[in-house]
Image (cartoon, rainbow, N blue to C red; front, side, top):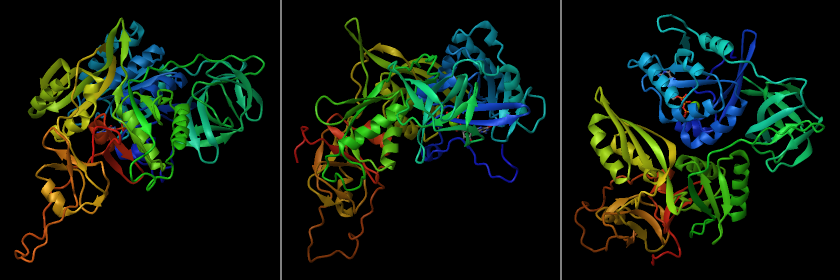
Length: 565
Ligand SMILES: Nc1nc2c(ncn2[C@@H]2O[C@H](COP(=O)(O)OP(=O)(O)OP(=O)(O)O)[C@@H](O)[C@H]2O)c(=O)[nH]1
Ligand SMILES: [Mg+2]
């Protein structure tokens, strides 16, 4: 779709800032391209299990799937998850073994692993003969067989044309288009994205909308856009099989159907797996409240959260029964922390509590969510990882060692994974890969301690001083540097002991007339431990909060907790 002189960035469809920064897809995107006489619509989905809610709903727009598998790593837990969803929707599947340029690529092995996965998921026999294409997305070529030479992606497009049927549906049937994704444009407001399943959608015609609650009411669509390459092009109508974005319905939500007012035929609602993790979002009541944020009231927070639930059906928001604030439930740590990060960048300021997994009760027994965790790690770090996972109540299901690498598969309570990622990255010096996916609800695994150490708490408002921090280093690990304003109750470090300790990070040296010649003037500080948003969320206890503003992330003690200045 691009002229030869056009610059095309890597990972073109990962257009959000956060996606570029983190190198992962967060939101599903649409695009399309021309191949010979065909117009091929593509939908990119996130792979990470925390965003699985999106996979469930965008699959409704698809007539087939490309299942991407790394030629060296083989299928991942999320491959299992997305394949399960694709099979449940009876979609034809093309397996793309990607990254064949990697020196350690093992294509035949990867195909065998995918086959095993199909079998494990009870795929119908006809799907077991899935078509396979080999590719290097990075170098821009695809191959039908490993021994051929080729320098373009045509084999994939040919395979799409030959193995994925054109959209079914009839232009003459009454209109049906279900909204599967929401996009937002500052000029047009909310856009509903979906596939025209039957009939034709036209602007400024009377159509009906069937909402999630079953009500049907008239509506007018003011604009229709089709996706060409990665852009939106305005059109006056869209017919059966096209994936389009429509403007004009301000409160459009995922799941609504646009249909014929004379013969309304709502499409079935989309089923979404339930959330497993929740956190409270409360207005900021720290001494620094309102200093850095643009939107700070509980009204602002509510408005923003309810806007998010319109677009993200895997997210649930309820007002708290005790106190002001909202209980926000989602699919995992990443799902919620991305939401927090998005809000913070938009100018919101608020506080969040320690994440809680969502328990269930069955026959009087308490059940909690478990994940299947897969770890690939250099053998030298295997011991420390196994030890940590044991403490987190993980049960090892499988362990395979080959070429100095260990592959570990665990079943572990979702609770046990909170904050584990950053620990894992440190323990394995960034050389490990971990992936997890929701497995099932199982028996409560017992107490899991998220940290054994107490914290260092600021006694009174002050500005941190290097000399004081230097002395505090002996007591624990410091989270911030000198010259920073802090307040009573703020957490600035971790104690080496289990108890909390109240400290004064501004305590200067007693001045005397006697000065040793310069030697004690300059102190050398250990660099502070940088805590990311995810680190902070995983770190706090029940009597603590993470204060989130556009400029800062602070840890603090709750006001009415056991702690006293
Ligand atoms: N060597 C090699 N690396 C590749 C190839 N394709 C992608 N990568 C790299 O793999 C990494 C992940 O690529 P993405 O396109 O973000 O993968 P993804 O499956 O979309 O990831 P999520 O959307 O987060 O699930 C990037 O660093 C790419 O540069 C390939 O053909 N060869
Ligand atoms: Mg991606």
